[in-house]
Length: 78
Image (tube, rainbow, N blue to C red; front, side):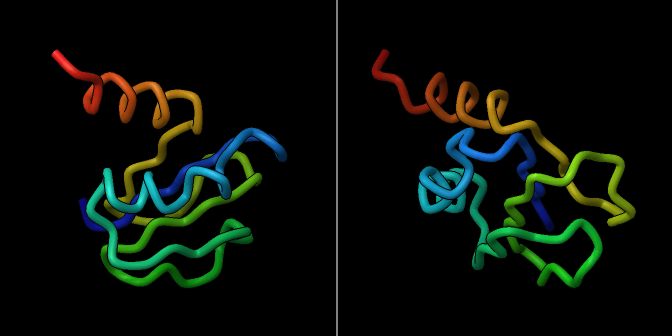
């Protein structure tokens, strides 16, 4: 993916899981506490408490609970 935006309420685990999410989505950098409109580098992961919609063409916008669930299901042993 080009840019991934993970959003959710404060204290929902976004920052705590940022490194795992970065690896899972194959992102090269993390922008923590993203303000909802500033620059996100290509192949970047933005972590935010702002709520969509976001005007970032081609970005994958994923709620933190969905992202963590997907990451856990994909990495779970068979």
